[in-house]
Length: 191
Image (cartoon, rainbow, N blue to C red; front, side, top):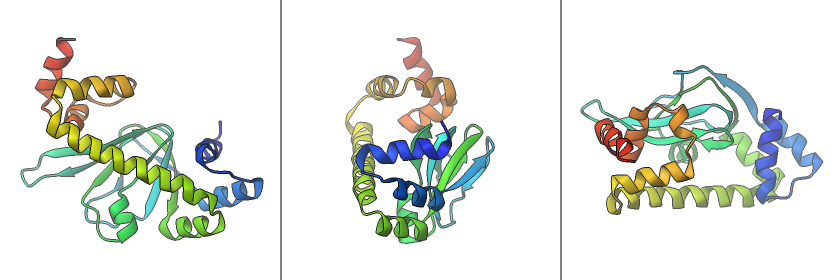
């Protein structure tokens, strides 16, 4: 399936899109290929794009005062990644975004995004649902780090996204789960 067809499929899940709308969407999104270990966004830059990952894997992370990396997002095929706070506020991002694999992305600028929503009002529903889900997922993840054990967080990730363990280095998964790599190894051995 072509990259823009994947995007249209996912947009069509929650919104009614006509053939005329499809043409506008194809024009609004720009294809980008990113090599493994290449940055898409550096902390301190304004996040200028929303990215739809058609194939590949990306992470967003921040570096703390001691130089430690903390993974905020890991996104793979057919998912969205961005720093929404920076994208909408147009303030510098706190996050870095990097490809973990050679990746094919479709990106849209804030200006084109706003124009697209004005041209195709049914897309507002899709993005409202998408952003609501992102907000709920962020809260769930925060709550999980406060109230659930590392084993429970690991088991939930394994249930929700088993493929991640074949495609993402364990050190990044440990960071995403908020545990040390040693703790992750111990949890995996006990299964």
